[in-house]
Length: 114
Image 1 (spheres, one colour):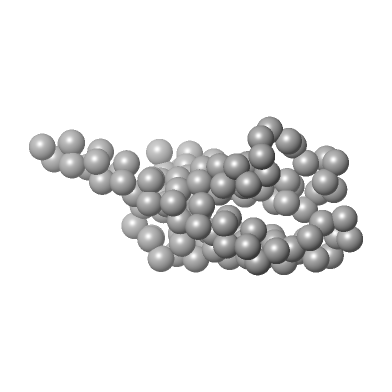
Image 2 (tube, rainbow, N blue to C red):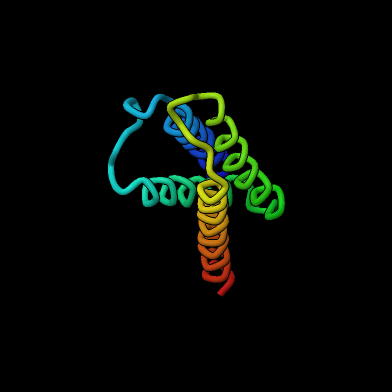
């Protein structure tokens, strides 16, 4: 499970990187951009939580760094814009995903111990 979750986190990182850094017309449009951002980072956070179950601080730092660095890299592309508020939304969504993942892990452990 851990190996699969780490692979999923890597795939999500690649997809998020592509969507964040590709030209706007190449970016997939599935819903409102804020909903897309939040959902992507929530899923990324869940994958990090499952992939690194004993590393809370490191997963939170990873989610925040990915959000911040990818947002900053948008400065290079003249067709994109880097916004602090977008980075914060993405990082918070990653934290929420990590919390969801850790809650699922805790519930699963509790059920197996009962």
